[in-house]
Length: 120
Image 1 (tube, rainbow, N blue to C red):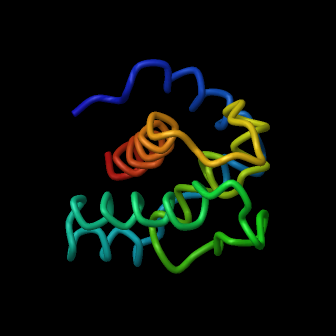
Image 2: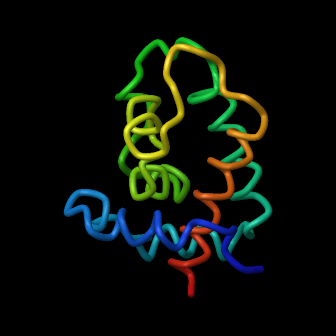
């Protein structure tokens, strides 16, 4: 499965960011994915997006995504999908309103594309 259209340019920009480009899946993350499969990772990503990003008001926005502990968390920081402020700055998704379904799908696609890219 290829990358969704338009993500090549986004990934080039993210790669040019010293902060975003330093994120990589660790050996532990890769083992976690290998043991559970991309389907489980995808389901977790969908859940994290709906609970931590989709609401109009996120109680601890900017601090809701740990830097490690789950491959999706690493991917969220690498792709600037970790909080609503980053979604606005990098993806032009407004803050202060609930994410629309197509935005949720877009964020999920970005996260999963980055994870697949990391896995080679």
